[in-house]
Length: 171
Image 1 (tube, one colour):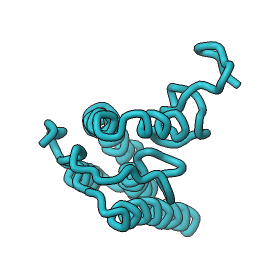
Image 2 (cartoon, rainbow, N blue to C red):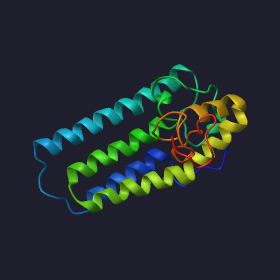
Image 3 (spheres, rainbow, N blue to C red):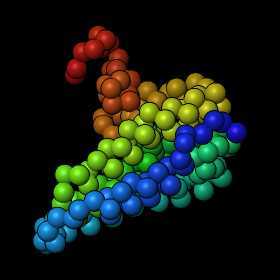
């Protein structure tokens, strides 16, 4: 088994939601804030569960503790817009909860979970997938950003620079 991050991502996300619940809550959400939170939650759930369904249909693992057990490189569905749609969905659910809580402090767990996933979990998975799928995974990384952004966009967004672009240049 690959050395895993300290907490599996679903547990980390639940810890973030618990932290949000323990923080003071703002005023009761009005219809606009409630609709924004619901829209974000539904979109996040669709992305997260859509990606999970694609993994299961491909017969590959969804277990973040053992990325080396990946049997297939899933690049369709939500994985066409983000290399980490399940984690993006988890972060989106926390963001929806922060919108409802209506306090700046409710955004701290969102940021903490996002940074923890980006710095601890995702690099472990990328290393395992790079070893398992080689050039196919490298091509996928060049075409699809780590999180969100224009596919094939800037390296900071997790994509490759455009062909012919000077290092550090922006299109």
